Length: 113
Length: 117
Image (cartoon, each protein chain N blue to C red):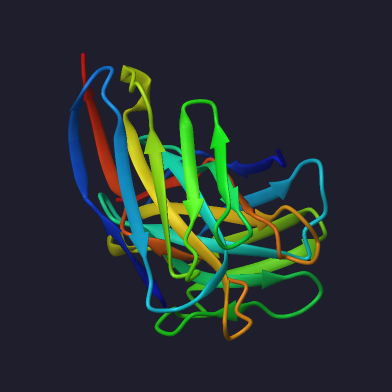
């Protein structure tokens, strides 16, 4: 299946710092989703983006849907220890009418107190 | 948001036995559900699309007879790992779209850790 290019793959950050991660694709998507997964759990939806150029916030999280519809970024501001986890981007409904999700490889975030 | 419940969260079974995993949409109906497999430190790999009232659609390389999927109602899909072997040990996760049209964001179950001994 399709894979999205997610970078960086892991990050060690100091508590209080901002975190930024990126996701790109060679295909167009109509929806971009950002999930967080903790060990032994299923992914939890953080932010959903539906329109090119859309900028959406959820608390300390901000995500944007790229203008080209081939990329998205997620920012976490003022990180706290509970932000630890793996963050996945996912694209849905590509230009071929495919509703299945394509996932990035994930970004492991570690917050150092 | 929509809630998807998956059961059991952990299961250990003997090699050669079958294991059934349930995925329920608790507060909405789902004509489509998805089953994923995830290896340690890797992303989710789609195994199959479960369709209510019809046959599941399997991804290339996924054995239909090995991973039986039944979408019996609008709120329940099951994945049965038949004749399990140690290499089937993995984390299995289901998801369902938040709307019946399947165009909204997908919500995931809690996952099932399968260990075959």
